[in-house]
Amino acid sequence: MYSINLIKEFALMLVALAGVALLSPIVFVANIARKALLGHSIADYFHTIAVGLDQLGGSVIYAQEDWTISSYTYYLCRYKANRAACVFRGLIDLIFGRGHCERSYKKELHEFQSHTKDI
Image (cartoon, rainbow, N blue to C red; front, side, top):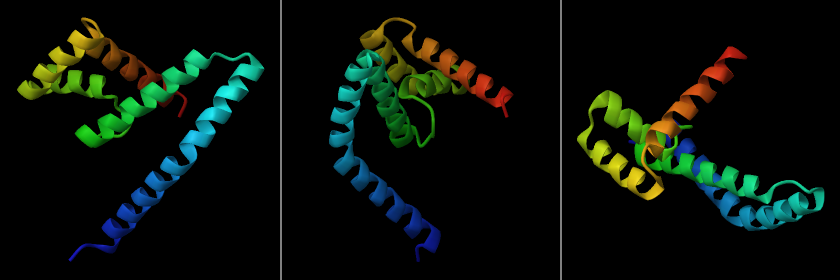
């Protein structure tokens, strides 16, 4: 029998997915208009969305919260000697440029360490 906690978490995930699916197009257009009116960088907004989607991918593929696909792939390859991750790392680096996964990992590690100093 499934635990009540599992059912609650699954329901929460479904509500979150529905909310994102329904609200994202509206908020996306509103944010682009707001950024344009205020003279803020739309490119930075797109980068923020890309990183968020990448972190979503890390959650789905690796079940790791707050890690991008590239950085966690590097971690698995480098520190856990995971052969599949090393192959995936090679593919990611081929697409996004040599050393992409390592740079992503080091950037996330630095950001994590910077945030934990504030706590």
